[in-house]
Image (cartoon, rainbow, N blue to C red; front, top):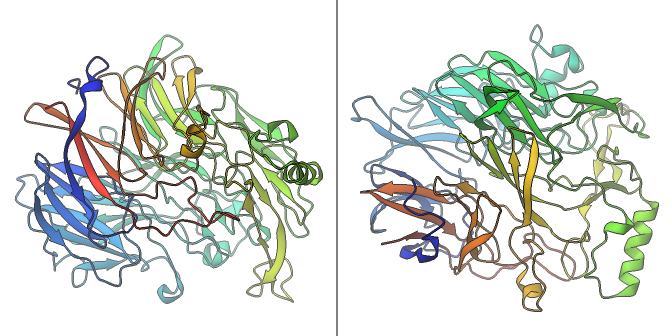
Length: 586
């Protein structure tokens, strides 16, 4: 779609708005099918709107006890003759299907209209607190392929990747990310780990190569995130990119980005498909970005890296019972998009109190700080770009035909510190006492609530993956309090946003400073921006109807600097004037 482009984007304006109808926070990514837009609003209800006008068509009210919804999107499926049209979503660990035309529940899906996602994992379903991801999964033919969220604790469920029949709700296949006896990778865990260990899950977006029938799955860390005495080994398939046969779940290839993760360095962004010219040959590739700040690029069918990846020695743990892996992989190209060190020289200039600055500097001086893979310890340990840094949900987009990749990332140093806490017997090295190590970690903030590292806190980086080089990098967004003082180019703070690249040469991205922006793909130059009533998190939707191009966003997040309570700056409890906003040139 090129109707909205560099030359006319300044004429983009609001065409209609739809209020969410309650003061809650929404991060939903709207989808548009057959002229209907599906959104989340009205106390986690699914709402169908006329995508041309915003007129409400129907509302599917969810269970009032719903505490977790597929709040990052929803899946649409239709039969070959379009007689059967369905929306599929998860809530409270259940998978459900409703009629896309009426919003009515489909009773013959699963058991009484729903499927319990806790079933079939080889664990007691009643003891599994969470297995549902906030992501909707992917439709392939008559299959819905799902990852999972699990929890962050020692008793986390396993991160099986599963496929369900979209009409019956029947489980079709499972892939065990914690391998069972006889399966590839079993020896990378303790012998009984498949019965008790958790995580290695795909909580983020999956990506489909439909023509090849391959689903690319980015996995997260095994659990517990920061201490792994109960899971000695490399821990396949944690922190990996998996290429699975979409019809069967059979493993085609994999690459593990972090061996025996004790940093929570998830692959939290969707793998991206594009075609590059490599050594003079057109090559279909898959690119993965992650929290570490790296870009990994592989041939799509074979998993062969486009550029060398080097296993380097990394610091050893000092923790009793823990066995960190002696090496970790480092891609030699492309260069990282995030800062991977945090020292005294990197401290923010926006700390006005000299005593606060000195206290921070002293803490940094005495912390263990040996680079990207410094293992957590009982003393302070610096982690950079941080377990909530680098690229996160939705943080990348591509121009698939020109071999270009665009990444939104944040730099947010963390300070890890392990301490003993009560746990189940046998879950740590001290089976007699049943003690476990847990992390009392925190992000390094100043008293103003801003990150302790110097800005930019959020950047947008453009890569040419034909060459494996960075084309440009610019700060994305601002901090309103600083902008009011004339301090710009800081990047927004604590973003959870995703870019969209259009054929018109534009990158659309929203930030929590209430701004939606359009930037030039050639150089990152800001071409247009508009301020909305609330903060933006998530991904814009670009769609075409009747020859007209539209941009839709969910502006229903807190428009503040902080997403978590920070000393002196508690998280805001003010009502959010949330709404879906559609813009165009009409």
